[in-house]
Image (cartoon, one colour):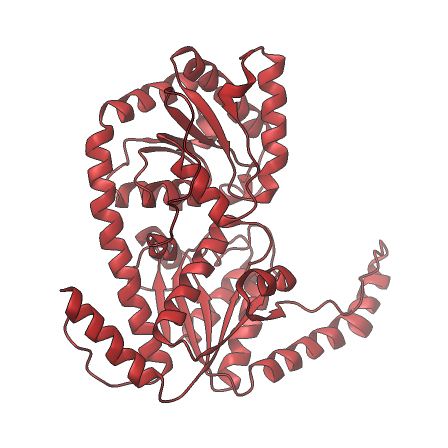
Length: 432
């Protein structure tokens, strides 16, 4: 089996090396969201494994950071031309749009075409990119539409790879997304819930494959050098998250976030009383402020006088997050990729759901019973689920190992398919 897989990869490399390609990737990268970064890392690993001579360029929201981190060329997803003036007068706003806004947008379209001219492919690699929850521009539906249309005008292959969908609130966003998807030469979605969501807004993706989140392709990352946990108490990784209400409702209430932190305070108090240490985790640099808020709340409620039992170390990268997850015995987390990367590392996990993707992931892994909704989080139910998870930990670990290995293979096979699509190869791969 190993020899066949090696022969298959070698055959692919020989064919792909016949002509080096220029491949662009698009997304919300370089802004400190470790889930997004993990999918980009996986895609880059796959492309570099199969096509080491390909020229890779990332169109993203944080070009300087991406260029420095991954040693690739970058382009800003939305070039800033003029700073918009804040007019209250409707007439002044209309004049600004006509005299400045429209010419600037036409210029951005020309830049997109010029950038992609001569390129071979534009890839949307994973993430929950099909949403307008926070923006229509930058990495949102409109700019994705602009780059997708430019790709087709330039004769590029357009690929949406293991992407997630929803929510989409505006009619414009739904239109931009549906048009961009229809232009694609290849589409796959990271879960069935994304397929069903798109179906509800009028885009049928029934014949498109469902392939797991690209982060499952990171199982080969070397995390052997993580710090050894001191002491004998088991450690529970608690993944905190700033309130992501717009992923559930268009006009969220901050009361949900307050209740979420209150219930987690009760949960941490119970953990400490029952012989566990707690490691605070984040999945986005935006969560740092929530961690500070939570530490203040714990102090106000005198949850513990032993500061060392609550571990709060900086997390600045995917590698940092993996190292800290590896140092945990169990994980209770909210951010999607905190949960997913814990699964990849074989850690028994309870998910606090804020979006259909969390529910779908836990169902895929056979862990749907270890799930609570962020909006209705209750500490006593969370404690009950945690105890059940601990009691079933060994069986859960075996299940996670089997599922993660299967999903890693599916991600690898998808890399083969998309490189074949880009190279227009009609060759027959050696059997695995």
